[in-house]
Length: 216
Image 1: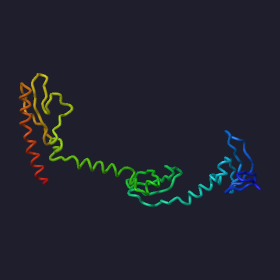
Image 2: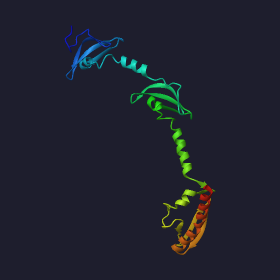
Image 3: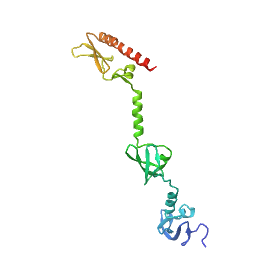
Image 4: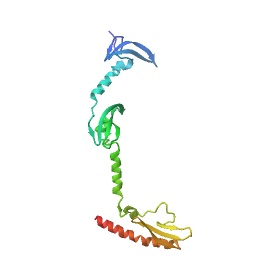
């Protein structure tokens, strides 16, 4: 009979039968073992004593296979789970999925089950475009947000929006409205051009007032 905590050839631990001691590696003792499935394996002695290792690995595979949820044919948002792959993501089986848009993608079972993924990415892209349309409004070719904000264009170097210095040294004032560029005139001084631009912007104020009044 084997002494307590002392392993001997022929001893059975789980599915493993100890055959003979293997060479010592880095100060640790090992055993040559034969698994019930027929596979031979070498296991560290401490793992055998603690019960950490009870097979060549077949027991873990069988347990994993039994507990794995079959998602084939199940729908998750726009995704249809097609087949399980050999890939794993943080221990979760990765499934090949078909998206309603026609794309193919791969998602972990955990992500699908917990609703962390609902499409190949097309759903998020559609929502992004929808949000952009909701944030920007065009009326007769005029962007409401642009004229309401009235921020200085990065391309403008004169110091005032819509006022530009010509090659002959004079100043030109212009503006865009309803897909048209309106020339507000050319002036000798910067101040005159700015005044013309401000006068022209009155059309913006009337436009915005009508727009917001119609939305109320």
